[in-house]
Picture 1 (spheres, one colour):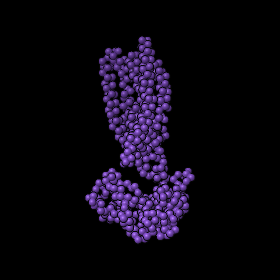
Picture 2 (picture 1 turned 45 degrees about the horizontal axis):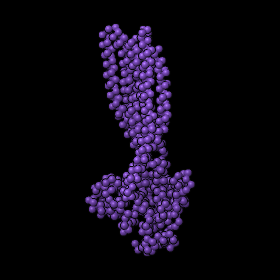
Picture 3 (picture 1 turned 180 degrees about the vertical axis):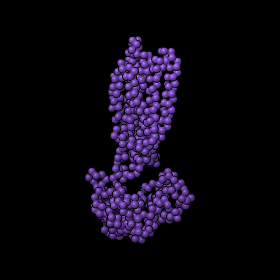
Length: 577
């Protein structure tokens, strides 16, 4: 319930439509409740006394009440639709903004498929709950309280039946809710699992087909789908008991009132019109309790979704923008840096990193898979924060820099960089939205992408979803051009030329070295990627085990010498570049 209250604070963004819709429900319900009370006088004062004037007057009052009730009901639907739409739209926006503020450490706490489900399916559950519960909730509370009150006014001798019926209905409702509440949480988790299977299959569809694993994927999806179906069936088997139980109570109360009411009419202690009105209130009160039970069942499911949504909203970004300094140069220093992904983890991904990268120089990083090369460079732009030690840029701790300015000053080109749906121009403008065509062409030339872009017909060529219309090497070169358009002070290549041939890679790196006052860091699996760097470090199990330039490392490091001999046939390749 606490989580749902936390989410409902977004009502404040559309108070006008919310208050209007609540007001209209109250007016609609009160006029509807007046009808049986007036109907009593039609029977007692009109029909029983053959008074046509009374029948006409009270009949017009009933018609007026009905018309007002219908009109207010219509306008409630209009304002409620606006309110619910605005509410859920704002909720999705706030969720998306919060996810965008997360650091990598925050994102490690959620599966990507779960985040998608929470922003879509869970918000849809809240939307459905609001759309389907506000009207019945207000109506049922009003009808129950006012209806029972009017019933006691009409006949206290018969109204006592409510005192017995209402607690019985409440017990039934509590039992149903207690048994369904845990199942709704499992249901949302099952939907998470379906999204996970579908997402993995779509992303890896080429791999699936290459390994002829379609049948395996079908079975995996069927298992997830069947589990969700079973949870749903199990939940609804309990929740559907709600209606028959309430209908049984309603008919039982109707029979009791008719039985006792008839005897009171015969003894002239009760008028026929009053008994008729009382029966109408019985139906309204029981129906209101049934509506209330349906609302609670809706709320019951929304509790699980609200909890999952609120888990995102209350998650505090681990990396916060607390600095205000702006980067001027790009001298990077690692001082006794240790890093681990989880605070309670005993294993450090990086240990005792001491490193200096002067502005305008290049650093090469090599090491085996899992040696934490990518982790090391991720710390520079504060995608993660160090566990111990600190990182300085221009002798200032990076935590003191404005986070946006810090990341704007650094370009990272990953091995598997992403292109978005749209044209080449639209993708490149991610680097600099104000870049002119001349600047774009210059970046494309350095990235060795100009020729194939022109072959495609220019910057307005549509890349398709995720850049499906270009090869892996072309995609990497476009991502390099995009990074260059940022005009960064530090540029990081994380094995980002792996899909390019060696000659193209050499041309790209040569072009990067021509950029003045730009510090460049190159992670590579191939010696040719790093051999011309001013300094090269070798990482092993998160530690720097050797450093130096190409010539010194070839003489002093057996690991580096073995790589050179295997890949290049000796030392001279790098020196003759």
